[in-house]
Length: 140
Length: 160
Picture 1 (cartoon, rainbow over the protein chains, first blue to last red):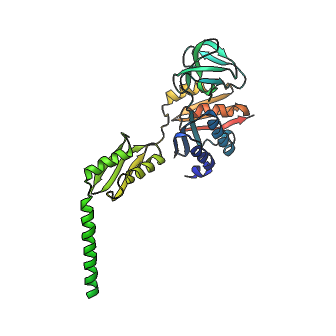
Picture 2 (tube, helix red, strand yellow; picture 1 turned 135 degrees about the horizontal axis):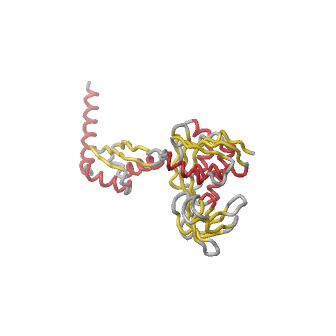
Picture 3 (cartoon, rainbow over the protein chains, first blue to last red; picture 1 turned 180 degrees about the vertical axis):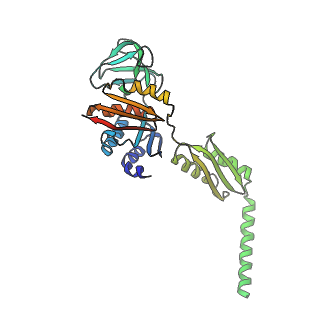
């Protein structure tokens, strides 16, 4: 229960930010958090708060997996790599050949979510392939 | 003695009156069950039993909130007929990925852009060592948390 106190601000913010299907539970000494944020801003806000409570996430007493509800087929997503281009691959995996690249901050189309890690996308040039979901930020 | 007798008569008449009233509006357990089932909605994981006006809820849900809301809904199905609600609903634990082979394969993808770190997986716990730039530590943690591990141990990471 101690973790619920330590991360109270994070949990309270999650509760008051319209996160749907919110699950918060301390399991085996780790605070597990799941839910679906109404937009990327809310997700980013939660990560900022988490980083304030546990700088650089080094303690390892939280696993937070918050999805964004606007990440649906046909929606637009922004490439949010640090600086490099994002690889668009033939299949869902880093062992798959690279077909194309999308530039940082480019807005591309989400065709479907192959799984939680890999999303099928279409670039501005009409190229289709799989990109790592972590580098795609849903718009709207 | 006289007073006690009088009191018991008063009480008895009270009981009779209450009894008469409740008889006219008595709701059978079967009817009550239908009412409560309607009130708690169509959740196939939640079961409703009624015995002599006592409602028992059982089954599984994912959150504490859900459990509480179901109890409140059940009570409000018929405030008069329901004597009490026994809430035996169990909160399902949050699922974590403890399949080492599957998790390890996903960790390879997640850490591909972090050549200066080494990640190992053991019983759902991802342990990462090495160095990561300050600006990228959140991306790394988000990628690993998205795999639903039991724990992500970054204590062996040097942030620069």
